Length: 372
Image (cartoon, rainbow, N blue to C red; front, side):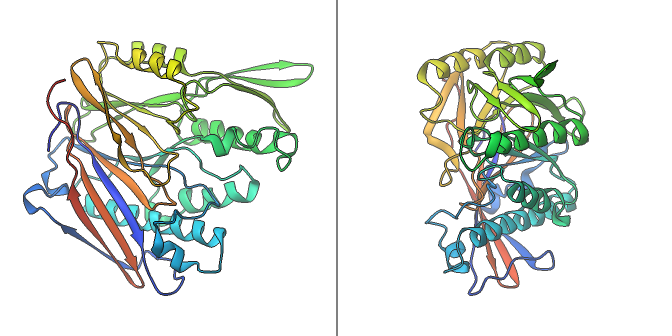
């Protein structure tokens, strides 16, 4: 089904086996389409491009209760086992799907990761996250555009298990270093030096354009606002110094004003009561600028959520704009989005992993269409 705005596909990923056997690249993977007339990948046209969206790798957090196959894998083995298994399954599924898309000339451009990279910003959690997602050969060096969530830079502040706020300091330091060194992106911040040390000050939001490899004029402008758009906090930390995280709303308004030639996708981590009604109204007003075409708002945080949040759409400039859960690693679900012009179609994909093999079922997802 087509909207007047974009093209997307959603993925549910589940895993099942009798023993804890981590999936490997050598395992086979088969794709089964439930509606052959609407087979998602086969509809792609020259100029289209794909993106992965997901949230909450969250080393080390348990699988959701409804992810029963993950629970069975780690019976009596605990949270670390579940987290490792769910992340490994997610990587294998994305890797297998990337291979199929690449074989048809549509290698996905990147992975957008909407927050909670770790559970508490501990050194061993971040190390395992980097090893699994940045170094796994199944992803073939695909770029990853991360956001930071409440478990990375909010829950840990002034916590007894994060001495001198070393956890938030570690995650923010990793975040800006990864963006600047590997993605060549400078997020929104400044550095000041005084007698007390360095002071990092800004919203730490960032944006970039992703374009079709065969049609460079067909691009989408992506925005990452991290935890939630109005989150603000000053963190006195060691060893870097002081971090002041500002609301990203003013930065967002400037960024959209400067990028009006391409459709827009907005990302952040949590869309819940922390994001107040007043701030939501300000956010909605900003993205309703008539010069911008917003295709969707993507977020994570709810480990059981994927697809349209509570069937909620915002009517912006006469178009339905869906509010979308990106899916989560503990729930073993994620989204694949196909961008084609200024519309999208959405399919749900169930990816099952059994000992020695895996298979994925593709289902169309019905969404609101037309004008509003």
